[in-house]
Picture 1: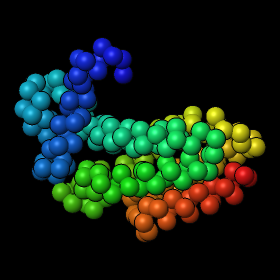
Picture 2: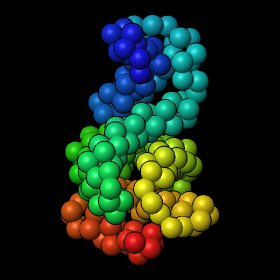
Picture 3: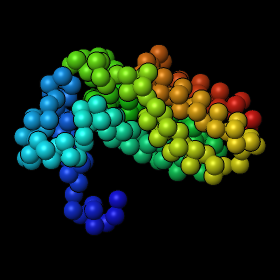
Length: 194
């Protein structure tokens, strides 16, 4: 985001997506309508449709907006570990899992409360193509800065494995973030051949 954009505030698109997240937490996904969004943002229903399209498109936009928060945590972790890829993966995994435990919208979706399970949960599980693709591309941009002795195909497979493993633990955590991050780091060390 440019300095001018930061000063100007969020775009209309960002405002609509943020309002949808708020409404989802308040009334559940079933309670989110374009009319309610328009009222919340202070614009016409047509403006809402112009910004986000259909309700399924809005759901995907909400998931991707939340993903941006998680990818910021990943970037911070990689910035703290510029010379050790496995430690960067450990820190990023732990940070993501800790954020997942505190993220109200994610918790509402994963716990299937507020009627969210009907349309939002598949965006994290069975229909998560955009989520996985975006996360994988972001992680790949960070990983290629480290010396890794893998060809492109196997590097892509390793990155995909890490992203999907973390996502799996976000959706269904079975241990503490620290323990899970340690396990992911252990697998990463062997997968990356370091």
